Image (tube, rainbow, N blue to C red; front, top):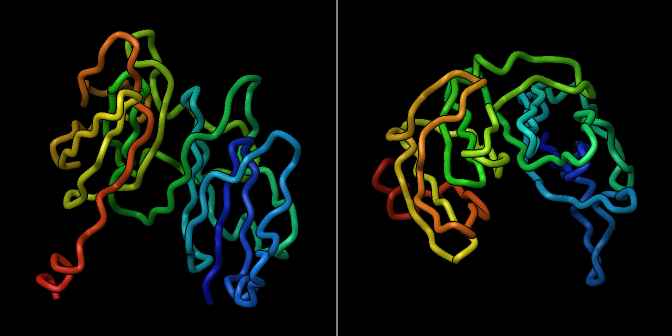
Length: 208
């Protein structure tokens, strides 16, 4: 059995069985009901037994078991994943097991990897723990990704420039650190988004 796990910028999370979306009309169907001012930002396919983590732009995060957010109906609102402070918002959701690293990148181009063991499982809905040391030099958090040694990451800035780098080359540090500079930016430029590079079909076939 598979599920769609959704997270919003205001810290709401929702898990629904995938079968609930199998009969889609041409005009579409409701996937989630949102509060006024909220936005659906992430949707991931899960098996219902994963660890979930959401991180915020002000450097907070919370990790909890997926079964702590039990499956609910397609048109439901969802439940609280993390309690946000005023002016904060969720900037990333990751799903991970007991191995690998969590990559965190800031708006001024700094970032680092941390072991997933640094993110202890808590009860859903709390304020969480600090996951990044924000300074004037780093700026706020832009995004987080679950990565391994073989992954590559693309960093896109507001000038439309993309760099691609191997995750294995990014420093591994503790959870409450700022990391190292990953991309050089002009004075008014910031990191706009990050994306994990997908394996091409050719690369997948070579490994089979």
